Amino acid sequence: MRVIGHRGCPALAPENTLAAFDAAAKRLDWVELDVRRCGSGELVVFHDETLDRVTGAPGRVAETTLAELQALTIGDSDESIPTLAAVFDALPDRVAVNVELKEAGLAADLAAIVGDAGNEILVSSFDAEALREVRETTALPAAFLFAADWESALSVAADLDCAAVHPHYDLLSSARVEEAHDRGFEVNAWTVPDREVARRFREYGVDGVIVDDPALAE
Image (tube, rainbow, N blue to C red; front, side, top):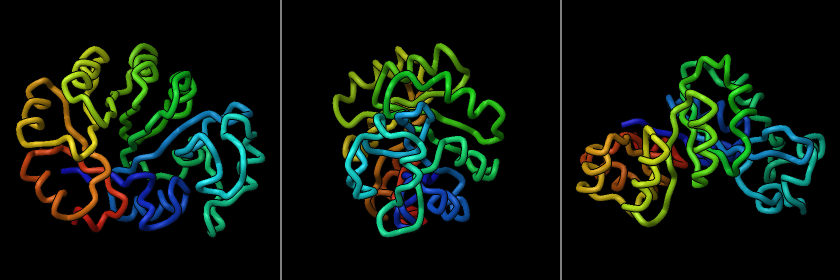
């Protein structure tokens, strides 16, 4: 069962920062990160639409230039908001990357950034249109993210020719994991909260768990 560091594992360092990905890469074979477009057009690694929760600053990522974003720091650290390109430059090729797209319209730029990367890449999103663009314009495998409506979500994943589904962990049972596998999907569960759930999912045959703390799956 693969262990995927959610946002680079905030238990190790501030989420979605180069420090987090560096720390996670020392312990894990997979990391997960969030991507959206900033106000000057670059793809940046940041989860929220707005800046306040993580940086304390006002404003929206989509309306803030890269220079302005990189003048901010994450929490009480000295870490700034990285570009997607900077993260791929920093990660060892052996570390696989689950790139979560937070919006549509990013597929072409994503492909340009990761085109020469040696990393294994899986693109996930809650946004079916974002994944449709990925499937139509790249050869990258896709995973549909969801937190409800199991049967409907599997139908969307099938329509998008996804390689995997990423359900919220509360949705999973042994029978559902078996059903997803029978339909040709790998199953990566998010965000697994404790060792007991991780142990149970290993017994279910879950392919991967997305965690904030890698120790939960050790």
